[in-house]
Length: 382
Image 1 (cartoon, rainbow, N blue to C red):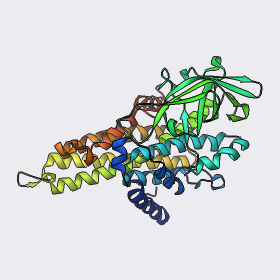
Image 2: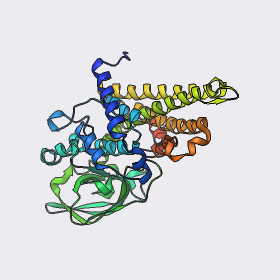
Image 3: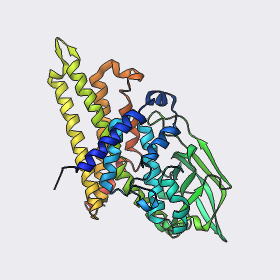
Image 4: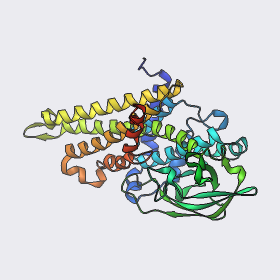
């Protein structure tokens, strides 16, 4: 095992870190306060290739493997205070661009993929419904073939990027009797007849990442907009979640490192009872535990990327990584607030952001309970 990054990887990460700090973080506090998505920041990130990292260069991406994709996302999380923007980019890239890249017909890829991978077109993944969260395949949305078209009926909720999306990757039942094999995946343009979008209320976590509900009222789309074969939707979604679980959470590893650095500096500077608080064992032990969780999270993350790039089974590794990172990020947020004390409650300090932004990480891309189910299955317990 070689844990040394190459010179190219180090240089790329340093470059992305400077870009995130100088460009993407500019005005972050105001955007977070106003719960405002900034298209100019999105465009700047997209111009850097951050909307299509793993996609082949021939299709407008950068052609990164899983590990290099993780390293890039980690660099953003380390230096960008606006995790909502990073989350929107990742949701677009892994849950939408990846399915089109890996499963779209040549016709679909030629029409959509370059614009999606370049970030000129923003996409949203329309999967979740009010009655089918963790039980994603209990959805009620349906799609019926009607000549050369499909007609979609139903609704989706809590859809990241919905209010700003130009196109939706939508999942619907085409054969309710077939279970896993009865779900299909479609690419649905924003202007498709019968499609409407309703923005959701403001979120406490990741507030700069907009979300909304999507309604399909006899929404008619060409049959050519089917991704993969009819009935392949569940497999396509599963494939995209492997990418999302594996790579998106690199942002939280970066954010944990950023917050740990803030905490260490505070422990050195803050004096109580005539000495820096970091000299108190109760404080230093907390910081050591934060460091331990960070480094363990990074090792699990990188191992998942290595397995993926080596073509080895990586579903269990991805579930372990996602589970540990999301739970560790929440704990890091709580620890940071405890270390900073009352000053952590001042919103402009941004010290509560990691906690607020990491709480939903235990839910999206499969809840912590679902990750434990995946690991238990690989252990032969299910």
